[in-house]
Image (cartoon, rainbow, N blue to C red; front, top):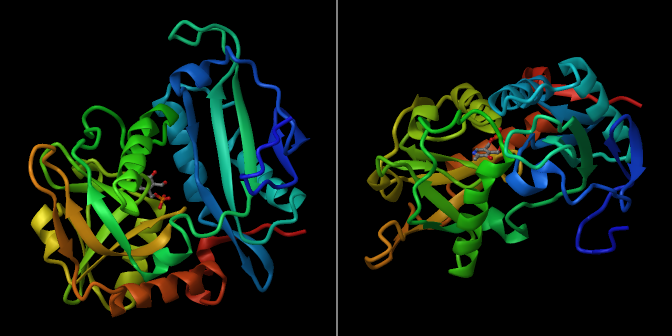
Length: 321
Ligand SMILES: Cc1ncc(COP(=O)(O)O)c(C=O)c1O
């Protein structure tokens, strides 16, 4: 039994063909994924709409889930349709409206050599209520730290995949930023340009232009990012996908993080800690407050995900009863 009360637990999670009580668990300490991070996962959100909960961009998330499985040389025992169905069932089973959904595919118990030759691949799907990822105050804008460690390079790993072990780098950066009194980290890439946050993409705004980067800058091309590029164009902004130099970020009119967990969060300061031996310099972005462009995008995004904008209904998969 899991008794830690910190987790905003839900009713049941799905594993190996059945739903289990949230506080039940029985994984073996010798399971492969626990030792080597040999798991792949997705982060998905469902939102309350007038027609009940709807999952945001479910096919795109499931495509990425299967791509991640491939990147980890993992044979997924379920088809895309089966996974979609299980995700919808998990949301329904828990009676959730707006929630975060986490499918996780992992090498289980079989052997502990690095090559998981006798380990079955198993699937978990959990869903629970997960509110503001960076805290309730984050909507007022977050203070960020550029960490000295450079983001894993796109030539070292398929940046489109979400592989558990790779997130250890994100975990350490996130911890270091918070221990330094910041809200979140920013990674530079090996080339010294902006890569991404530990679990978020970065956008900058300059005049009427929105700029974000892509996989060749060692950033995961997030689904929220892609949606914002479309929303931004529909709102009349110019959009550009290309490198973001550190100076572009410092000199931006506005900047923000985006991702499934954080949604859209304004960045109001960036402290440059990229040189571990040098001084840390704090830069205020624009006015130091969430600007009109990011506020407009947040509104448009919230309208889309909650089914209030017919133009973006195409992004929603209704969970049904
Ligand atoms: C490293 C990283 N970058 C960016 C993102 C944003 O991607 P998405 O919008 O698809 O959630 C995520 C979250 O999935 C991430 O883990």
